[in-house]
Amino acid sequence: MVMSRKAPTSANDLINPVGRPTVTQDLSENVILTSVDDLYNWAKLSSLWPMLYGTACCFIEFAALIGSRFDFDRYGLVPRSSPRQSDLLITAGTVTMKMAPALVRLYEQMPEPRYVIAMGACTITGGMFSVDSPSAVRGVDKLIPVDVYLPGCPPRPEAIVDAVIKLRKKVSNEALMERGNLIQTNRFHTISHEMKAVEPILDGRYLSTGTRIAPPKQIAEAIGMPVPPALQAEQAQKAVVKAKGKA
Amino acid sequence: MAEEKTTKPAAEEEQENALVEQAKISQWLIKNGFAHELVEIDDTGVEVLQVDRQFLLPFSTALYAYGFNYLQCQGAFDLGPGKDLVSFYHLIKAKDDVYQPQEVRIKVHVPRDDATIPSVYWIWKAADWQERESYDMYGIVYEGHPNLKRILMPEDWVGWPLRKDYISPDFFELQEAY
Image 1 (cartoon, chains in turn green, yellow):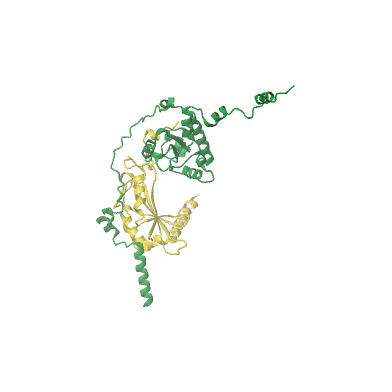
Image 2 (cartoon, helix red, strand yellow):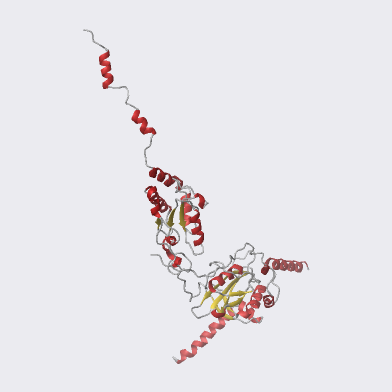
């Protein structure tokens, strides 16, 4: 009786193959299946570039966030100095009516998709200026659409990180199909300003205006005697003192 | 009671005399014929002098000649609706190695319907922006100022925001958030 050696080995091969079939593993290591939405959102939320915008004390906290201690680069936030290159506007600081047109223009110059975090009490409701200020805008959401409201006066850098995480969640939930549904409603000015528009008064020639050379006649008469600049007067006095000392 | 009534004014008069004796700058000004009113000597020992606006410029020149070469602060305030506006000037003598420079404060009252004051820009150049701010907030016109324009509010703003009788416009941006 001759035992066949081949038969058992082939049987062993069948029972204990040398390696696992590699076809599906190769597939899972090299092919990603996802939706375009998820890919697009992942790319967006991983590179939220905020604009360097600060009008008051909130920016001190925001600047702390840029530094190494709080290090917001780990969220893909890279501060940009141009609205053309930024996706995120963190309104750090009080916005006044004089600043409002500039803020709206900056927002309009940012490319889509763009996000806004209203940072601090001033930009949410006007904060401590909301009662009697003649110029503080009572919340930037009267001017531009806001995605995340970040309360605090000013908020700690950790709170800004929290707001950024919340914004990332919001971004990750967006869908290309619903892009059109996100347009703001009910944003309108109820009262026209009715101010008489005047030419800009800052023309860059402040110190060289003709009115600065000499006082008007009436003023010069009222002053009575020529007023030398303080330094010259001091030098003249010193010269007198020296002359007296010599004499 | 009667005694008290008679003694009180005397005591007050004594106090006032003491005050006048203390006020060295005021005495020097009176000696040289610059009429003014000594309002008080405040808790830090600074004399507060009130002067009519038509005498402000000669008065200021005299103080400049007396050594007050530095306008440390100029500002304004409103005494109340219907009352006067006040423009004040805080002067010090700036010199080398001075530990506590001599100080004096001038106040000029003006009626709110005719708020004009001659500008001290030509005596102290520091008055430039400070007078612009007082003009911006209270509508006090500083005559002879080289560039009297609004400095803080938008250039087309109507009204003087820090006057007590000012009413904020009901602009959309200024309406309360809810």
